[in-house]
Image 1 (cartoon, one colour):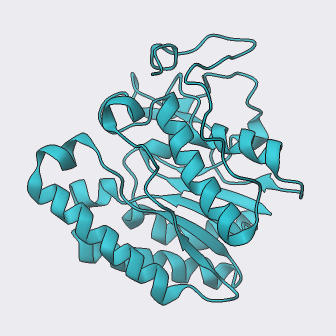
Image 2 (cartoon, one colour; image 1 turned 90 degrees about the vertical axis):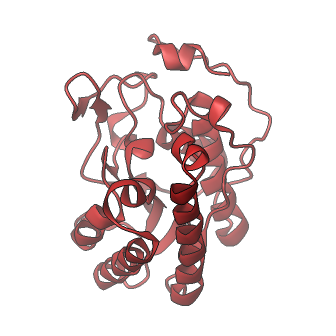
Image 3 (cartoon, rainbow, N blue to C red; image 1 turned 45 degrees about the vertical axis):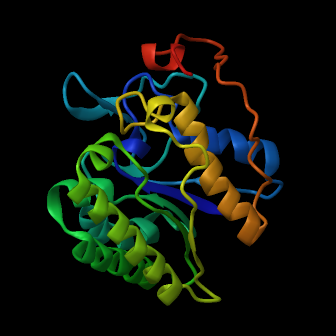
Length: 247
């Protein structure tokens, strides 16, 4: 299994984060018996001070470089990833995509219908590169803007409806698509540090939603622990203020 994480700022993370990618790596190491590899062209975090994706300061410095690989970017959405995904799948021989996109599209670039069309283009291009590729797609999850802006919240709900339809329309026996559930227990006050980006607890919830879908549908790994402690123990380094104040 060759996994590629595809996402926006919630997936790339920023300086001092563990990231939900780290949580998934931990989970697969603990529960998955088969061989797997995490692949992708990028390995860094976003550096807020400079506004560029150059940071290697993960909260756990023991997170190995080969497991840090991804295709995620701050401010990138379906609009940006659809043109890239074919080449990336082909180059890195990815067969399993874990995708969390959409919020940035709806917030700045495209409406729900246009964003859903970019989802379909993304799937088509991935399959051109690897006809048997499979993917888990995360709906847009609640954030502070959706709660405060009724029109934006409605657009997010509409897109999630269209995403579910796209998954139902496009999934095949040989190239299955899964729609992940909104992370159970997601509340912006505890699951995020700023109303959007995941706190350490939110990272676990995101990883758990992806892990649950893969385990239930494909038998990959095991159930994600629902009762993990909220505090993070990290050997060999310090954590960011966000990590230290995890709920």
